Length: 155
Image (cartoon, rainbow, N blue to C red; front, top):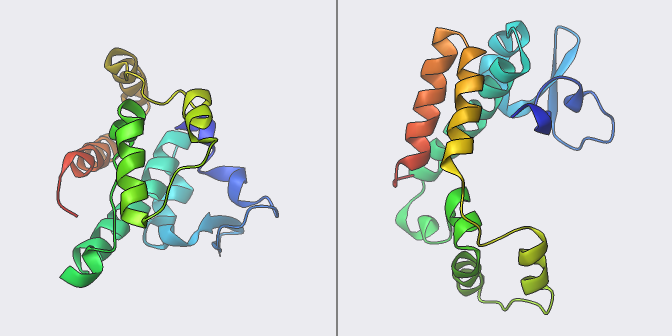
């Protein structure tokens, strides 16, 4: 989470094209407007990032849930884990959905991006434990809610 820089100076960079809001003389992504105070007061980058990205994810879920059936058919959801582990299959789903074909560079790109790989859940769990130690109880609950949301099959 920390390496991606989804918080802090990332939104101060003039080359960043994310729509931002100014709060207490700092820039924040527009989707975090409901949690600006929590993000601003967050004790570390992990807490700030969790508040910011959770707002984006939960807003996306609410919007998808509220779509009518006709519009829901125009949305394809792909889970990160599926894309990483079964890249070829997920690419087929995407090309079918978009009614298009892959290019001559697709296989090479999948190889370069280490697609079709097995996710090491032990490493993921170790990183999760490190992050949990850096969170307060309120933010731990938020993380668990996000995790449950990820594994939920519905919008």
